[in-house]
Image (cartoon, rainbow, N blue to C red):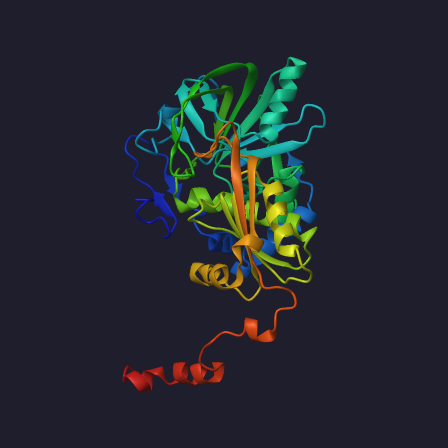
Amino acid sequence: MLWKLQHGPTVLFENVDGYDTPVVGNLLNTRDKLAIALDIGPDEVQPRVVHALNNPIEPTVVDEAPWLDVQHPGDVDLTDILPIPVISERDAGRYISAGVLICKDPETGRRNMAICRMQVQGPGQIGVYLAPTHSRGFLQTHRARGTKMDVAVAIGLHPGLLVASQLLTPLDETHVAGGIFQQPVPLARARTVDVEVPTGAEIVLEGVIDPAEEETEGPFGEFPGTYAPQRKNPVIRLTAVSTRERPIFQMIVGGRHPEHLATGAIAREAGLFNAIRSVVPGVRRVLLTEGGTCRFHAVVSIAKRFPGEGRLTIVTAFANQDLIKHVVVVDDDIDLDNPTDVEWAVATRTRGHEDLVVLPGMKSNPVDPMSVDRTITKVGIDATLPVDAPAEARQRVGVPAHVMEDITHRWGDITGNN
C-alpha cells in the first residue's frame, strides 16, 4: 500500500493482523508535509532548517513522558508486542526503519540522533548499522576507553525531529530540532540508560552497545534501490522497552521509496546550502533529486558574482557530503523543480572542456553500489553563464507574459469550457 501511494497521503493501518498497535507510514514522503507539520509554507522549509542550524535552541529535560506509561523488560521479544515488518523481499528479517537512535559522546556529553536500520535478531537483541558519522565515532571512542555505549531508540516522532536526526552537523541535533520548532524540545530521561529522549515519542527502546560485539546483519533494501549486503555490525542489547498506552508504530519503507529519500534530503539540502553559502554567498537553493536517490545527485542554483563560483560550488558540495557524486550548478533563473529546465541549462550553458569537473579517487560511502575501496569518481557540471554574458543570453524565447496571462484568463471562453 505504501509503495502504491508512494507520493500520496499518510496512511494509518489500524487493523494489523495479530497486533493491537496501528502502523503509520508516508508521514514524510514529500517536503510539503514538513511544511504542514511546522505550519509554514513549502518555500520556507529549507530556510527554516538552515536558520535552525545557525540558531539552535537547547532542550529542556523533564521527569515525565507519555512513552513511560507501559513498561516491558529488556528481554521481551519485540515481535510479540510491536508490528515490525519485513519491508523488502530479500531483507534478512524484520526491520525497525524509522527508529531514531540517540547516544552521547563519552568525552563531551553531546547527543547525537540518527535514523539507523535495525534488524530484530531475537528477544532483547537488535543488529544495527551505524553509518560512518557521529554515532559510529562515539562508539569508536567507547572502544578506545573499553566502555559500552548507552543508547535509546525513539520510534514515532514529529517529522521535525526526524529531519534533525539526519543533519550532518557537529551540533547536538536536539538543539537544532529546537531551532526547527523555534522552541526547546522537551526530553525525558530513559529508565535504564544515561540518555534523554523526546517526550513526544510513541515507543522507546533502551539498551547498550558493546564495541567488541558484532553479529551478521542484513541484507537490507537501501536507498540506492539495491541491497546492502550481509556484514558484521554492532548489536544493541535491550535493557528496557516503554510505550504509550496506545502507541502507533511508525515505519519508513526502505529502498527508493520517496519517504526514505525525502526524510534525509531535507536535512542534507539545508546542510549543503549552509556550507556553500559560506564560500558562495549568492547561493539560492539546493535540491537533492529523487532520481539521484536524494543522496548522489545535487542541483544548486546561484546568483553568480565572480568567475569560478560555479566550480567552487561543485567542490564545496563534494567536500561537504561524501555521498554526493554528481553536481550540476545553474543560474538562479533555472527552476530546480523542473528537470527539463535543468537539462536545458546543461544543454545551452556548458562547454565540456571548460565546465566539467572530474575528481577521481574521492572518498565515497559504503552504501554506494559503485564504490571501489570506498572511493568513487565525482563529476560536476558548471551550467552557469559567464559573469559578462550579454543580457540576451538570459532571455527566453516565448510569448509575452501579458499575452499569456490574457489567454489564461479567457481560456474558458476560447475553448468553450465555461
